[in-house]
Length: 357
Image (tube, rainbow, N blue to C red):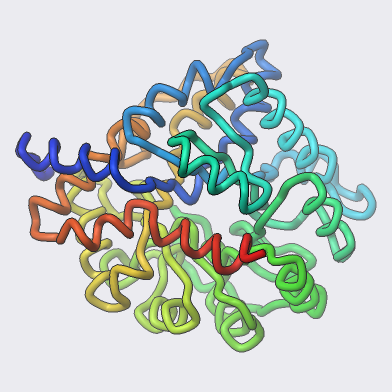
């Protein structure tokens, strides 16, 4: 049985979400927009997300650009690497979809971030969930930057020319192999351009290398604690501590297979992860990065004439995020800590690492 949250804490959570920045550090939004556009839909953010973003008081969403396995296989052998065209189409689709939305701003620089916060708008920041699409052509990072991309994960849960990802969420196996020379060069180049590094899908060996190589703080946009739920998509205590030492943040993942809530105790498991992370590395290094995929999965299924049943996300939609904040308050988390965890930590990270000038 999941947590029953009392109304008094829901009201307190709503107030926190009104007063302080709220950030979701991972959503496959660009890819979903492209899928839905290919199925004839328009105004995807307006019709599928805007109301729930506003209900949750969200100020910033990190939209990943994720190239699916099927695309990479279909375009196998392309030079310099498969998936480049698809990545560009996702970025283009996202930009076109939010054009004309007065409440939504694409965040490319510091002034955009500050406008979002000052005017209580919704910002969307673009980043790459895996760099399969650049191959070993590191110069393509500059092209992505010019298109507005402000961060990258080297890998998704698969190998590419830069390194090896961890296993997929429903698997349980250690993936050997570290970063390639091109992967090391990519990290250095990203730091020169002030692009953030996301390690959520990196394997353990690659993570160790990142800790030695990175000169700037890196983040795990959508990972939970491996001690609370033993999944290779989650971080060990040592990895969490290394992330915190260098000034990073980890966003709690809202997929039930990663949070470990397959029995339906979604809020309880999310709370347990966050409470454990705060205990181990402090509230300053914890945030929200839910990776809500049910809407994406429905969009993909509709495009190919299939249906999707069931729920893989711990939350039905973004409008339920204050319910998690309320559950944490009810379990004894302080309002002061939650002010930062619901979004302030990621905002300050961006100010210091990505938009410092």
